[in-house]
Amino acid sequence: MNTHSVSPRRPRLSRQVLTFCGAALLLLLALLASLALGASQIPLAQVTRLLLIPDDSTNSLVVHALRLPRTLVAGLAGAGLGVSGLLLQGVTRNPLADPGILGVEAGGAFAILVMVVFFPAAPAVLFVPAAFVGGALAAAAAYGAASSVGLTPLRLALSGVAVASLLGAATRAVQILFETRAQGALFALSGSVAGRTWEQFWQVAPWLGLGLGLGLLLSPRVNILALGEDVASSLGTRTARDSALITGLGVLLAAGAVSVVGPIGFVGLIVPHAARALTGVDHRLSLPLSALLGAALLIVADIAARLIDRPAETPVGILVAAAGAPFFVLLARHIGRGRA
Image (cartoon, rainbow, N blue to C red; front, side, top):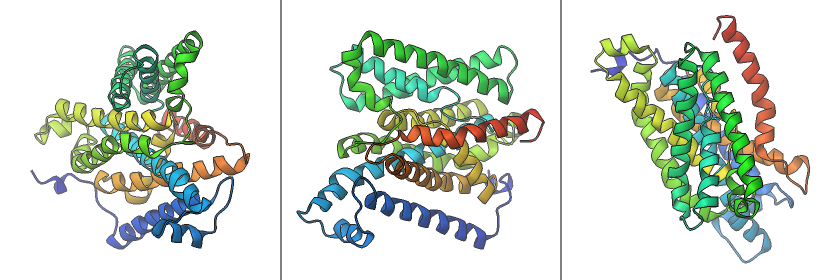
């Protein structure tokens, strides 16, 4: 089947090229700024030189051992959350779908906490699978609760928020009851990229890299599913299989991000809407743009988190929520009035 016949109309090629070049430039500038700014500032020219030719200086150690892994973790997690939100919105045709709002991030964080507290000998490589199981169960609970009273975008969002709140309370209870053991899971509960290491980057990079690659391959199927179940079935698509596959992929991307930076809400809500505004609704274009914009957003938020209360740091999740919460309210109001 030729998917071009059912894909949305693309913007002009020149606009596409400018959009992607602008997003790539924004990401590059954010990456360089992240390496240069912090408790001590390093000139951009020196940062560029140290990236190419490391030496034994203190600044070289700061760039390569502290800021570079932190920046790459933020970029990879931001890309994963942005694409996760796009996939979940596309497959559910719900503009409010987001890994945080649907409870996926809270479920993943709770699963990692349970593993650290009750299975302390488990290797760190199992954190992503554990977060995937927890996130999938949380999303299923939110979907089931919304379906029982009639599935609508607002009801699904409210069910997800309720599930996330319940899991947040359970997470806090486990932290209080097992305070000493829970210390090992703080990295997955903090909503921050501070102190992230090369070890954590390489633990999560294969999972998120695989998820982003599969997302690109499956983007034509998301286009078809976004047309609606009846239309997709008439085109010969196995809607149940594809929906489950793409939903699982969205949960995997969110789980990978949560396993290394903790729950950071609203990235998966803001970024897909921004990408579609720039490229249209064709997921073959909006998906890679969501990865670029998500990475840039989280890196920029991390830079701001370092500078607002220097030398202390504000958790990056707080800054993203400050921008995402008003966006969520505005979007919900538009949907409530029948305007997506």
